[in-house]
Length: 189
Picture 1 (cartoon, rainbow, N blue to C red):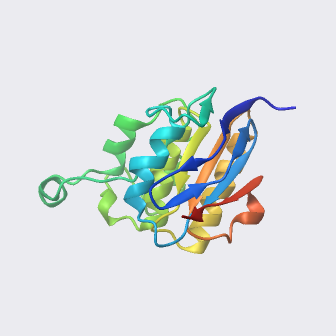
Picture 2 (cartoon, rainbow, N blue to C red):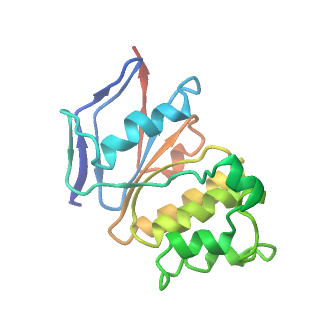
């Protein structure tokens, strides 16, 4: 039996309840939220619990996860000094990782490509590669991606967690349900 990474007895938030579940090594758990739940609430309330930054009485974490953040920059920076792919990777990726140059497999992406010019699929891959270069215990969402991008990103995560990793996917639909080890549907209160 695989080691338990997270043991949740259920998480009650203001408007919804995430039923009990266990996350074990090698597993991908899908937490299906209603589309009416705003993405910011995920980052502010759910992700901090699973990353170990915020304690919750019903959640035991033996190994904290790392949240795959969305890339954001100020309007000033975006307009006058936009962050490039090369700059982002220099600051955020482990250089000797197999993910260090993976984004460049897309032939039109170079070190000088401005991140704000990337569409959702490639922008997510960039942040996903950066986190996976350091850990394979992650929590992520697939906002701003099309179905092909969602499936591609999920397949990358599945491959990586085979090496003693684990992941939680927070999504607003259940079409990736068959890719996941466990499916948890949040309930409205």
